[in-house]
Length: 640
Image 1 (tube, rainbow, N blue to C red):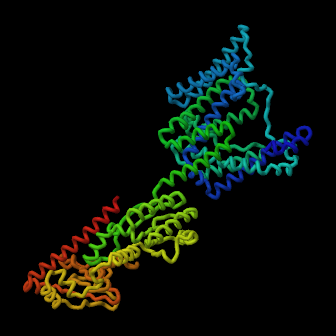
Image 2: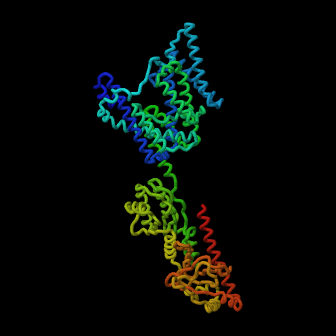
Image 3: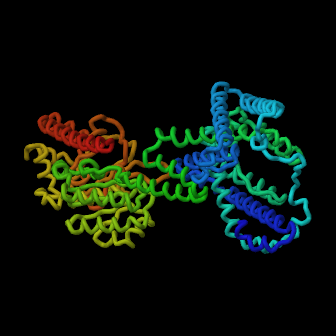
């Protein structure tokens, strides 16, 4: 920002450049504060929850690294760069660096050994007093030592005032500051990122929940106040907060004390800084920085995969060389790439089932059930889940290619019921899947796509008239079963006459005749119901052709269709033989033919034709066993 304001600064006379610069800093603080407050007010702090952990760890590790490098510079006055390495061969500079490192190790051992809030303050104050006494003795003995190099160079008469209290501050060229609006916007963006990164990082280190929206609002108000007084923008310091926590300062008192000491320095006590040796502060910063780097860069290796962990040292090095903004951008972009690679490895196919493992609710005849079970691989059901994008869609395409070559399906059902959303880039893979299935003469059925999914699939060409759309999986399964039965040229009539069906079921035409004599057309109410839930079970129903739905009624809500019985099936046998009331309602579809065997008729048959009732019981037990086996297969498949 100062570089952008360079021409305007050089045109100023006297102290005009100073106050123009201070005014620019104040404006950036107010803009930064207003931006933070608006973000918090609109509850956008939740965006911080989407920052990947490697980016957080890299940011904290880089903060520690910068603090460690800054500690050496504070102690020696020389920045650590490749061109400055020879300067550390100077004995005095080498001694400063060595003492700083030694003091840092001592602080680390002390705070690890004595877990008390007073350990760190006592150690620092003791080091300052001992060092000042030692330097005094060295000067008294006349030893050659340049003490000014070891201490902070602060003049006793130094005094700081608030820029906003000076009249020149309010008479600057405010329009000139507008030329730096891109840099001011960058400051606001960096402040928001810093607050979110530091707050989420502190959440993990302190194991507390932080209201990010409140943090943004508080930071916003603080920056506005700072700017109005002529101060610069600021945000929570993750390293100083961590230092306070490790020293035992977990309450508000730590912040109040820090603010009081800073205010005291502003009020005229800044000269006391001149009595603090450089290595005391530098060693403290070096200890905090190295511990932060150790935790984030080294200890995190056991918690992350290699690809995720590599992002942390990359961010540390990038921030050290090119700055925080470039490092964060690289971290976020790399995090997105890692996320895309990781998600592409996740199989969006929750289950791949055959029609025997996931059949429709339509109860078919024994012969049809046997055909479906023997040819179940010809119908493949792919139950999809999660979010679909280009990587996961391509994996689905590879699965379909393998399925076409190995299973050679007649029907493939894609169940989108559990799919949260779909990226437009996934459309090309879905179109290719449709083309592959069309080339192999495979019927494609799509179940319950949302309007958004249907729109994307249609635009990509994955949906056309050749693709069947159903709102429910049960309807799609029933259509697939019918298609499979047609494909294998089932050599049984879809609707066998009652006499032929019962002859095959009971093993004798004579038994079938005796049973048919006792059957009566089922009494169907005007609303199409054979019976209602709770009715006495005094009849056994035989469906010659058509369909009968089993519905579970709910007070005040539409009924739920539980199952459906097709041609040549028996229903109501459980309640009939157990003598319990109806557990569901039975509704007859149009053009269905249903016969009823009353309990009195069954008792007559048991008395006069015991072999017939025995055969009927055997047939009933057999179809119950077939249905149970079918259900067991589906349950086992769903538990995979």
